[in-house]
Length: 92
Image (cartoon, rainbow, N blue to C red; front, side, top):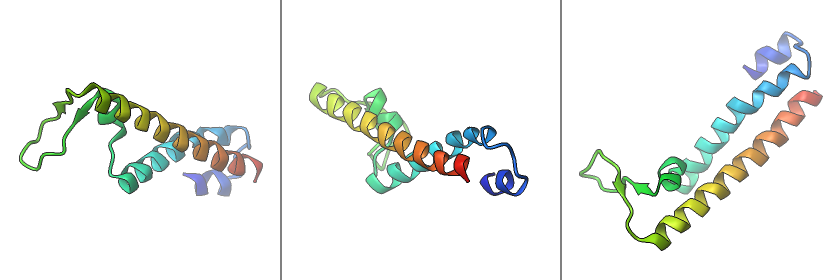
């Protein structure tokens, strides 16, 4: 998508839409790197059991709080990186 927008010489302000796929890519990378699911962390659930296909609710309130903070931190990291990369593509 990025290459197509650059090759077609699309208006630089229209390139701002790149933030969405870039954010998704970055958040996926961070989740894989940290072995932590942002969606589960934000919801207070987990699926770390090998024998289960369903997510289970975390009952420890301190663990839920820590997971939610970690999910927020990862979202903020992904957004920051996505904004920086998008700005580069808008300037090019």
